[in-house]
Length: 184
Length: 174
Picture 1 (cartoon, helix red, strand yellow):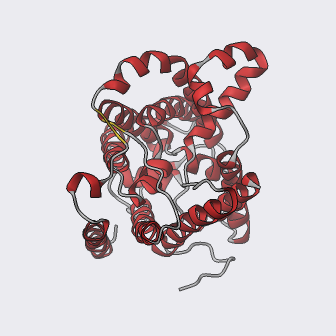
Picture 2 (cartoon, one colour):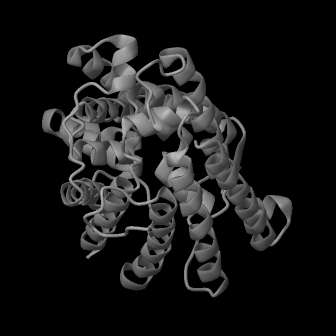
Picture 3 (tube, rainbow over the protein chains, first blue to last red):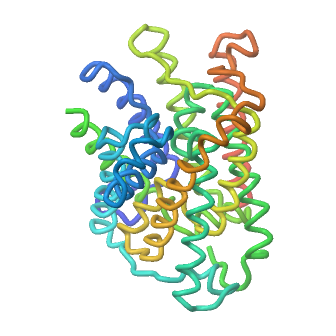
């Protein structure tokens, strides 16, 4: 098994196991250093960034919104964690030479054509719906799927089941069987 | 300090997501079409290892849990909405950022959409708080509490289910 930093890929089992260790270390280190356990999660950061963006136009409005008040529009652990995901993925992709420009993914293309505008609209609409859903459910595959299930929380298990069911049903309807472009 | 730890943790997480190939639209939608189980292999392994580690540290009194509340109505509706958007976008919040970093420029539009979705949720929150979020609210409950069991037998069952799934995936070449 090649675990070189320059390898193009690592086994998902190995990378996943390392994420499990990372998640535990994160909780232990943050408990010791900042006295708050930080479990991995990502979607609240989108709320905070949206809050900052809206502040530019209407600061009072954001201050009065109960959800922004509840989540606190601030640059916190999780926001830097999300920035870190970008940096880490960039380093890994560059070292492994797997960086690839793509504006339309193949499965999308066989169903909706090669227009990058159509794909951009789809990605945007999907993004709107999924983040609204994640916040309603109380988390995303990181917060609920990983962190919730590691703690054996009822919410994490239920959320993951409904994420997967929603995704599987929609994908079947949208992309059919994945068409001829499918290759392993 | 909080932010520095967050950044380092994020870099390691992003690195592992990229090396595990789970950032890709093809892998995420590939799973939803039940043709490629990469993201499930990755996620279940992380959960199994994390579960053992978290409960070991918790038993030793080193750490506290941070359990999210169970709101049945919100989790079912929100979870299904998430799945709907996830299939269209092909990314979840964490992976969208990493996908952009590995050159999948269309992830940018998904990220922009997510920010709009977050803003819309903040608008809808006062209404949802009075309605959907009150449906089936059970508080911060865990499986050991609900089942009246120690976490360890549950961890063993999850691990066995995980390993059996992995064997099956590998046999089927998924």
